[in-house]
Amino acid sequence: MRFLKYALLIALIVAAAACAPEDLDITPSPTATNTPEPTETPRPTNTPDPAAQSAETEDAANADSESLLDQLVAAVPAQMSGGALLWRRTREEVVYEEVEGGEIAIVAMSEPGGSEADLTFGVFETPEAAQAYYDEVLGRVRSLENAQTRENFPQPNAFGGGTYGSDAIFVQDNLYVRISIPQFSSTAGEPLSPLARSVFQIVNGVLGTE
Image 1 (spheres, rainbow, N blue to C red):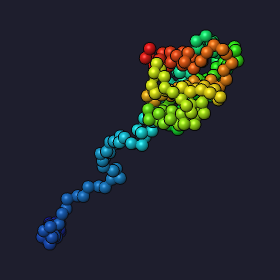
Image 2: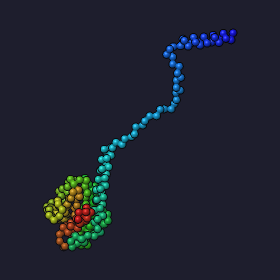
Image 3: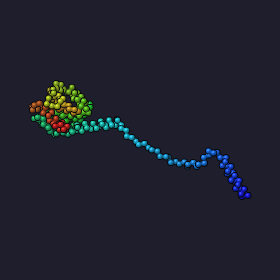
Image 4: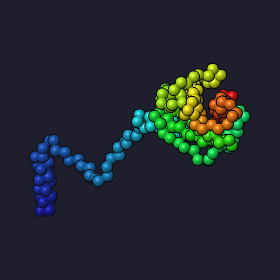
């Protein structure tokens, strides 16, 4: 009886296997997990920003101009000779002014006889900007209306004088220089040339062109 039960069970298993579809895949499926597969992250690239580079270049140029202007101002001594006259810095304060294409600094001077002078140094972004400012001053300053060039000074230059005092202006590359003597009370002679020579000793010393 027990043998008969086993025989029937085996027959049922064989019959079930025979009825199963041929393409039945009985391979166990992999168990899904929540762990993401690793992916390669692209490396960031440092693409230069043209606007940032331009700003950095401009900042560096401005810093160089300010440095040169500060050097020129600092090089003006507490007193300096101007021929027979001894000029002294009237005050330590220096007047700085932003102008088209650059910046200027004005140093006030005086001498014991009552004469007064202003030394102006200007540093510009380009030689063209310095020349444009030189031309603008030459066209508007009354004492330079009949200005003349003096050959024994850096070119271009313009020397003039009259009722409104005396002035001399110069431009070299991107550097502008003006010597203005609105009030002169001495009998020591023409003041511009000797003072200009002393000023250019300072300029050449700073620029290293002595």
